[in-house]
Image (cartoon, one colour):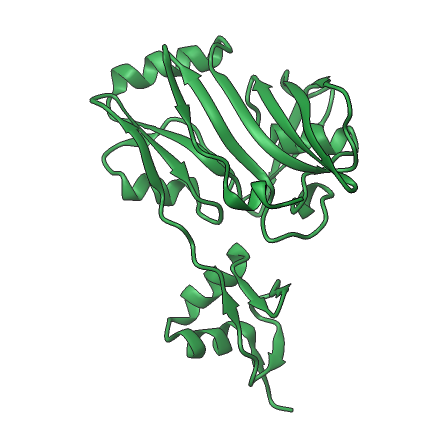
Length: 244
C-alpha cells in the first residue's frame, strides 16, 4: 500500500496549496468517514478520500458608527474576522472553535468606553454549552484562573496565583449523560468557561484540551452580550439544537 502525508493527499484532492491543506487539518475540518484527521503530516493510504467541512461565513448582526457585531462561525480565528471587517478592530476574542457574538469597534473613543465596562464587570456575557455528565442544579464557580502560554498556545488552570474569575452555570436540557447549560461569565479570563467546567468535572463536549470527548466541534456558543445599553444575540447553531 502506497502511503503519503495526509496534507499532500488533501492538497491534491481539493486542488489547493500544501499550506492551505495543513491549515484545514489543523482547524479540525477534515474527516475520513466520521473520523477527524488529527495530524497533517501523518502518513496514510495515498488513495484516501477526505470529507471536508465547509466553514460558514461570519454573519453581521449589527453595525453603527461605533461598532460592528458579527456571528462568528466555529473553526475561524477571531483575527481572521478582524481582517474581513477592516478597519474595525477586535474588542474581545472568541476561541477558534467557539461560535457566536463577536464585537469589533470602529473608533478609539468607543473602544475605551467599552473596555471600561469590561473592567467594571458591567458587560453581560451569556454562552450556551453541551457538557459531559448531568448538571441538575445551578452551580457557581468562583475560582481564580492562571493562564500560561507555550508554543503560542494558551492553557488555563484554576490556581490561587491566578486572576479572579466567576462563572454561573444553569442547566437547561439533560439528555443521556450530557447536559445543555447556560453560562454567564464575570471577569472574562482566557478559557474561563472551559477551565471552570473542567474544574467541576463537566468538561465541554468536543473540548479535548480540557477533558471533553471528541466531537465535531467544541460545543460552546457565545449567545448573548449586553454592553452600553445595547443587546446582541447570535442564534443557537443547528448542531446545538439537534445534539440530543
